Image (cartoon, rainbow, N blue to C red; front, side, top):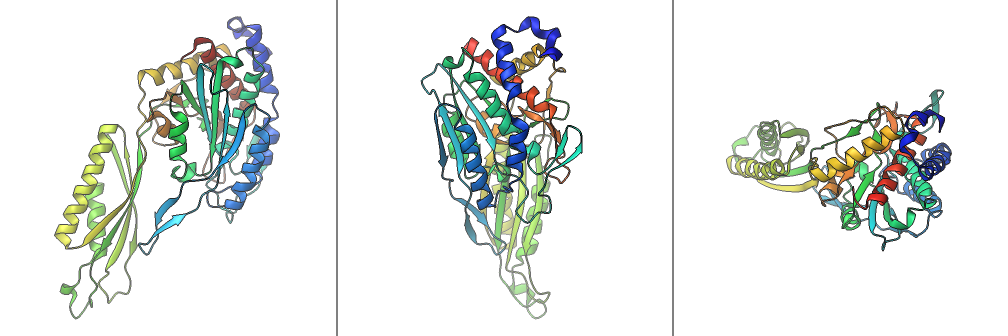
Length: 410
């Protein structure tokens, strides 16, 4: 507590006791245990093992812990077939649903590293800096959730606040198997906190764009490339034309990334099928609606001009997350709590990334989605966690939640 002494005048004795409990939680040991198990989104055995560890850990809190079956997820394979993908179970804890203040805390147990990825083990880069898969993104964030809630439970304010904790298994691939669960749990909440890693300086991600991943299956007509190519309908050319048309939609409010074309075959055959994969990131709800309409218009034009048939698969699974007045108040509360703790000034800025915070904000609930500890190089083998920030962020969360409990609102 000494390092926050210059700010202690704003903290009560109850606050100080809560903060000490948050900092004393065994977060590093938990991160080391959880990150030692590979839980890439497609590694169902690893996800099951981690889900079991998390269920055991969160059972220390009151309420009921349950594992929720994932919704089925559809995907277009390289041959143009729509396949169902199985995802892992999600963890859900509900505590005091009758309390006047209701919070949602979310995290994810999956990582971007599959079971056969070479990045599997933990190592210390230097004292206090831990390198390992999922350390920052975001098994450390899960440990911060548990530490903050454990501290909250010992506070006299606990009875005033109820909460749902949701740890999903598929955030890294877009939360398709958990989106309905997120929406269900967000309903009626006072506020939400999501535990993606903070920016390296401790800052927060503010506004986020939306994101949609689409696969456009183009069906043409094969023919001999030398004898009668005019009888064919080149699906690869149509897909390439569509990629260029979509790329031309880029604007300050819309990022477009035509990412891949699957299809084609022998050089002497006009290809009869191709699949264009494209990511669209609109910055506002209006831009999202316009982008979807423009996508459909471009597909219709390509279908007509190339005499091919196109089928669109996909959707905007992450709606845009603008900063509305309620969200701004929550950010300001987190900033003020950081100041009370004597942390460097907490600022926020718009970012191009997306996460479950997008889904929560779309339900009309104010959310700060970078409440996790500081780290960096996520989604790479250089990923690292700054260990000192575990206690720092657990205290920030605990104080934020107690302030919301006191106010009854953000």
